[in-house]
Length: 514
Image (cartoon, rainbow, N blue to C red; front, top):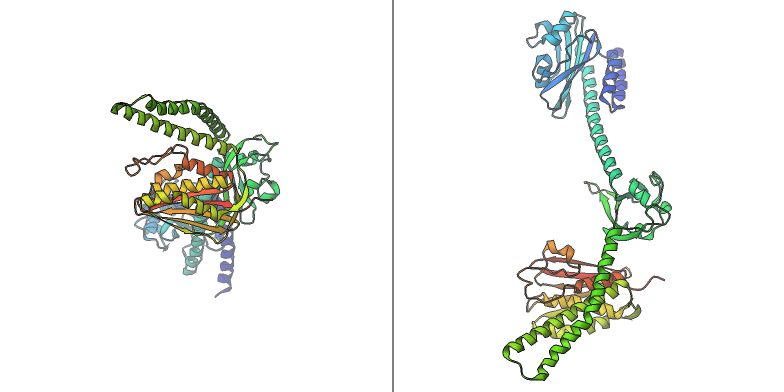
């Protein structure tokens, strides 16, 4: 290999590095204009760029004679010598453009008029896509050699890579700009941290919620800037939700947000960190409190009238025999009064639990509590021919409100009996996991449709379909159960599928934190 060729190849390497160093096409064109002449001789240099619709191309003269006179109009995809190069996807050395059958008057015609006859044209390709063509032309009758073609191919390959990188860069910049606009505009606080706890992203709404100056969190360790234990505890292996009261001193002091955190994983399964979204729910909490206060007040006021109706109905029989119609009405009055009394009692009970008025935490034998509950529901299960299996630890002491936990178990096991057909199977499993007691009540009953699952713990919500018609209930049992578990700083969840049964489970800490 000659010294001249070695020197040209070394210069090509420098040009390729310069092309790769800029993500902007106009700067890449300028690199060609400044340095391409060092490795490939020319008197005219142009870049022909295919349009986005791939229906044609534009000629951008970069350097040399004819730069200001070559037509800048759009060319159709197959027009001229360049159109042939784009179609065939092969480089060509043309010794005399005036004799080429595809010569275009607006390009080759003008170059020939200016005395440029030889041309070297190379397609710019990226995989199966043609991005454009590199166009060299010169006056020298010797034209272009095979070594010129090899050097020019290196430039074309480098330009193809640089253009593709520029397109990806522009797409990324557009997406980043859109994401930044969305995050800046949203009223929800958004936070992203990596697995080391460094803040990757925090939008203005989050920093304002935390009473921090804009940009104070980027690249910082979260624990050094935010000391809210409830927020820091969100970042774990599972999606978690918590209610967080915003700190004093900030513009949103005292307001309540619902924070939901989840893992961030790439499409290749790589763990990036966690993201948390904080939504202001202060108004919703106030409305919920107003609704609860109203329900509690009305329920308390209804207690006496219902008891009066029940007492009056019971006294009717003491005044003499009733006709068949009167007896039927008497029975209906008593049944309705009993139902209303249960409903009001449940509402008052729910109000007390949510207000935390009667929670009494003491250590007790949890296994004995389970056995007591099973004894209480044994008669109902036997009437339907159902079997209840248990899996319990030999010994288990829990610090909680024994009376309330009995209520939870009675609700869950009672529902399993109620919604499981005769001869069905029910299984109660109690395990200890990481200082928590986990209780699961499984059945092979009618199951719950997916659309109803998010609402089963809501007050008065009952699944309405053909299989549940005729099954009595106030719609408050699971709401009470959820409130009791929440009051114990636990969590409760359900898994179910129609026709396959349901599993209601809850987890509670074994002991209070000191």
